[in-house]
Length: 371
Image (cartoon, rainbow, N blue to C red; front, side, top):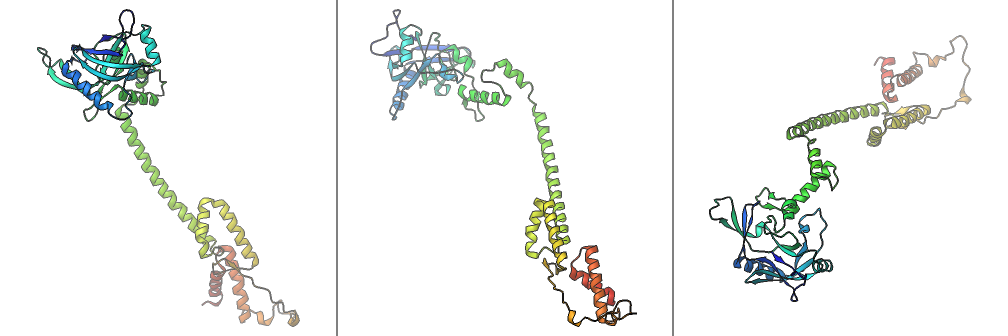
């Protein structure tokens, strides 16, 4: 905890500023005492040197009022710590100020520096003397960053920051494996919750709590999940039954149009009947009418009979009178008469039962001949 400037707002010529004095600084809310001793300063300097040896090391951030610890607030660099030193009076840092940082400091708007370290970067020294287990002593061994502020006091925890602002904005807790969860992680959780609740980013705590009252409890969620599983099971059963019925219906249509659908075309027409049953039935009906108009349907292969009439005009004879308009050769007892009768009966069966002509012909033949 150190003044950036003297009372005349004059900055040091060498650019070095005290970040933390030696001593022990209680953090009442967190139940710890922060120990800033020679060992702590030496450890922080050593860690900084190791980090600075990495290529493209930018330095440690110096922000305004620890705003970088709260993702809801706008944060910009006041400066960057380019070097760190362990001195008899505590921890010192060499700061390169940004344009806005230099202006704020020179103008006297900010007069103090406040260091920041994470709880995970502190060594637990055990309970304070006479305090039992209530107050622990911790020694920081790594500097996380720093801030310019007008309210400095060494009392921040997770991260340990010397500003009252951090205690109110940086929530902390424990993850499932016991590790510390910092303010940034909790902020992401809160943002996801607000998105889920349909709240704006600037919603107040009261608005969030009020919205959460409408959320279903664990029992209600479990009941909804069970209901959803039951409905899914019923849906799957109905889908299976529907598929079975559709298959049976397609097979029936294939049988109805056996005379015009060839074996090789059954797969095609099965798909058409599933996609557009009405349209497919119209097309098949037209095909069947065309086949019947051309004569007959043979063998169920879709090849319409193309029988040409045999005109025997040259050998035609007049029908003798007194025989009922039929020649002796066409009598029901003659072979020609039976053939005519079988043919006529077969056509009747085709029209009445919609069966292939070959099937109807065999049935008619049995009816007429009795065989």
